[in-house]
Length: 464
Image (cartoon, rainbow, N blue to C red; front, top):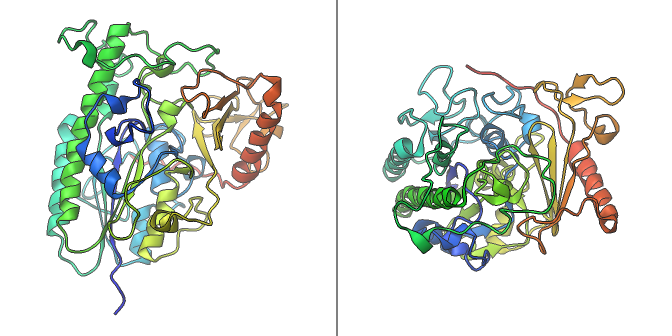
């Protein structure tokens, strides 16, 4: 008899940077990395039993765009979700729809979705139900403190009590550490962060990062906050505590998976990172590492290699759709851009090209990672999210046309280039150094040939 396909559990957090897992201390050794200031026994357990990608990137460091790529295998310019609160292009199938039509998997979703319109949590029925998934309902408060325990508890109950013959595809959408957004003036009328060390935490407060002050003109000032040093340290402390709450929710889910007698593939990731005082920033939206680098762990005991910390291969959220299809034994949807990771995480070898990754930001921004270098450019924004690019010559806005790129659209001069091996905190911009002009050209060509020529621009589907 044909062997039963594995169950699949995808766990996605919100606003979690790559350095928030204590097991990664050896790879993020500077004391300002947050892994030195928190305890994450369940993340450590997942990492010990699974395959961690330390070069994992968000495809677009903001909620809806990033999530649209995780659940379609297409970049946000293709899903049509280039900004928050619009839905995925109706012509692009999401994971639930694709599994519904191509497999016998039972498909359930619990928790934050935020890729279907101006709402976070799916309804059981009606316009806010996620196509292709059945909803396990929880509260609608929209914060980790209220919802994550409900999500992890409800999903734990589903996993432990699922007795059907056919496998399941389940998604747990957790909110923390996104609650840190409410500590800043952007989402709250006043700052909630204490102005001094009122709890006497002293040396247990995380230090300011080395790039709190930096030596280049920041061309993307969005999300900068004028906190005092004490406020920043309290902010970082509170962010770490939110990670620890998330860790407890992860533990409930892992307990449920480990209690089963069959096999369950677990993939954990986050939609984007958090400013965390680096470049004096909070939140996301920007192309720096604190916003773009996110955790990505694959776990399937007996199949996926354990205790692996991969610093070589670059992955992103766009690779998840292709990979879960491979594990389910079904083809990936047409035009998927993700790489198949099954062979890599099971054997350590792959024929996929995994030495570069792409991301978008702020409607018209582009990020390219290859080797040690990261290149950032941004086209001039028209102010119209549906026609964001400005045509050179007549100044008219339009959608992006593949193969055109810099030859067709106005590009702002504020490019960036970093050598992340020598400068992991992104302190020195190399874009205007003549010694790196060839590298700038190489990265721009890679962007044009391997990304801009291959995308199929989508239109947003604005669900209520």
